[in-house]
Length: 252
Image (cartoon, rainbow, N blue to C red; front, side, top):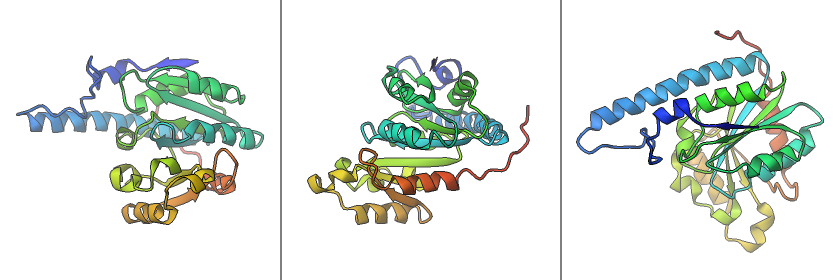
C-alpha cells in the first residue's frame, strides 16, 4: 500500500521541487517569513490532531530521522522481528521515490504504508494524516515513522509523534551534531548505530555524545548495532518509556 504525497504538500512545493518554506525571494524577506510561518502553523495544527487521534488509541508514534544509509530500515526490521510478538507494530515509510524500504518491512509481517514525497525532502503532518487513514493501525500499536533521509528539513515538521529519534552511524563521522545542530536540539533520543564497525572507522563515541548533549542536555543517547543486536535492549527500554500514555479525547 502506498500514499503519494499531493494536495496539501503541493501547496508547499513548487514544480521544481523547491519547498516554499526554504525559498528566500530576493527583495521580499517579509513575504517569505510570513509564508514560512503559515506553512508551519498549518502543519502544527494537523500534527495536534494526529497526536490526539493516536493517543486516544494508545498508539505510540516515533519519528525516526537520519541521513541516507544510516540504517533506519535495518533498525526497524530488527525491532519488528523482536518486539512484534509483544504488541502490534505498524510502519510509515517515507522516501522520495520507490517502495523498496516498504517491501523490506512488509517481509517482516508488519503493516506498512509507503509515502513517496517526490522532490520533497521530509514528511509532514498532512502526509501522516493520510497515511494513518490508509494504515488504520490497531489500538496500542507501536507506529514507527521512517522519515526521508535528511538531517535538515525533517527537524522543522511536527508529525504528531511521541518521540523524535535521530539516528547516526559510525561511518558518517562523529561531527554530525556540530554540522546539523537543529535536529539534535529537538531530538528526544540519539541512536548511534553500526558500532560493530568501530574497529574499522574513525569515530569517537564520547565526543559525539558530548556534542549532542551540549546542544540538548536532556537528550538520551543509545549506542547499538542493528545488525548484530548489540545495545538493542536499551533501545527497547526507551521505546517502553515512551509508551505509557493516557487516552485523551479527540476533537472531531
